[in-house]
Image (tube, rainbow, N blue to C red; front, side):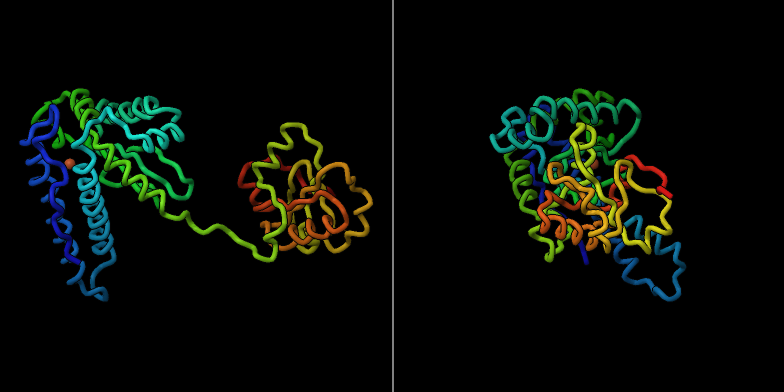
Length: 321
Ligand SMILES: [Fe+2]
């Protein structure tokens, strides 16, 4: 595909403390150069004979394509991040920043701090405010080399910290450039981007329709229960054929053969909750919890199972012999 040059989003003459000359140079030389470079790379890739081209050539071109594409996208975001009154943060954006950073000021301090640290360490790149649909939250982060984007994240605000973004007006005075950028943030557009990003559904979660009505607890829930000293009966219900080869188990759990429930159910108390789990958190742990609930116990299964607990770095012990 051929990437078109996007029109300049910001009206340069409206900016406070940032000259039209700087924006013109940035747009024409750097943004335009990036789009032209990207199109040249794409053309090269399109013309390659995949059967005869050395893999390292394709690798280099794909890496260059990624860098140029990200640079183009981030420049377009940058030029639409400014052009407003940076002090007037709209209500919904204030609520989102307060939710994820504690307050607008705390967000601002972190964002400015990141931009300043990039300049102070001689680095160059971007500082981005990005919405992550997986978690439904905003995060500030640094993106150097026109890369380092958060997978699945949607950046909603960008400051360009490459020297070409400020040296015409500010020389080496990055602090003044960052302050001018903050004064000119177009919050209405940033808010609109954030609202659009929030409509993106998070990635699909594991669903087990056959256990949809069954109560579960996460490994984090179980860890919190144990830390709080809450009495809980934890049953490792991994199948016998699996357990004979297992080396370790969750500390605080006892292994019980899920196929011989009648042999051990008498040990359990109905006064305290029961948590069951299997290897990965699929059928056996769920079925054991269902069977215990049918017998009147307050039983839930632990999502993620044995390996979920290990991935959380929960306490482990060697298998009982
Ligand atoms: Fe730039």
